[in-house]
Each structure stands twice: as structure tokens, then as C-alpha cells.
Image 1 (tube, one colour):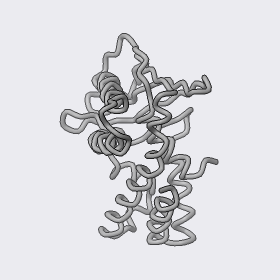
Image 2: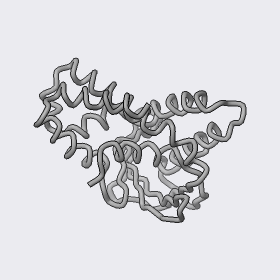
Image 3: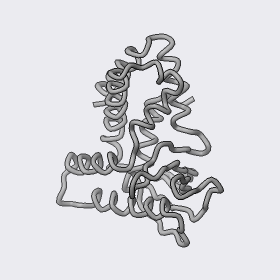
Image 4: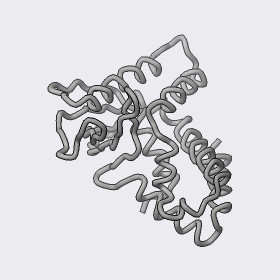
Length: 203
């Protein structure tokens, strides 16, 4: 079982640390946006006028537009989310986001030069005008291939990611199992503090 540190690294590095391999016959708007996202991200990463902190800052701004941290956080907690107070929800989302960013920050830029992603022209039968699953194939720097798909929903003119499945394993489900154990042992505030501690540990 992957630790939630590894899950956190995976969701962000899969989103950020990629080079685009062209795919033809992309028809769904979510597929087209995924391809556009990758082009924009790589433009930031390959901009030699920016230092690494500046690149990370811009990537974070981009992620805010395309990753729904609030929904990912709520899904990752699952049913216990209803027990959170409004303040605890705010604190958890902030701690969750900070942990995700801190975990990937020192690795994403390096990994970006060594992995490739192909957006596949495969359409899910569940795709609608407001919901979509975008399938990709990722090749890492060791030439190992991974099937990764993104669950997305339309918000205004933007498609937002709320879950990522890697080789059939749902990131939010992995989190849910692990966060549930922490809540049982340490309570809600204990989980929030655990995320904060993890952020400090990886900085």
C-alpha cells in the first residue's frame, strides 16, 4: 500500500512533470484542454528566464485553476467530512494543499525533463458535456509505462481535475483509507496536524 506521501507526490507529478507526445483525433473538450494544459506547463518549465522558485510559483497558480483542491480534499476524507466543522474544513484544505505542493516542489522540475505523456483519443461511455475521463499514457525516465486517467468536471469554461487513477488505483481512495486510519487514532485535528507536520518534514 502506498503511503499518503507517495500518493501526494504521484498526483502532482503526474499533473506537472510531463512532456507532451502528440496524439491525434482528440475530440472531447476535456482532452483538448489536457493537451493545452501540458503545452502551457512545459512552456513554464522550459522558460530559461525564470529560476526554479519562479517556475514553481507559476505552476502553483496554474494548478489552482485546474486542480479542484477542495473537492479532492473532501473526497479523500470521505464520509467523515460531514463531521468536520467549517473551520476544520478550511484548515484541512489549506494543510492538504500545502502538503501536496511541498511534496512535489523539489522533484517536479527535475522529473519534467525525463517523462512523456500521451493524451489518448479514447472516450469513456460516461463522458458528457459536463463530466469526462481523460486517458493518458505516461512513460517515465526508466521507460516504464503507466496508464493514468483524470476524472474531470466542467466549471464555467474550464475542466477541473478532481481525481486521478494510476494503473486503476484511485488517488482519492488511497487517501481515504489512510486518512480514515489517522482520524480513528488521532481525530480530525490530529489529521490536520499530521498534514502540517508532513509539509514541514519535506521542506
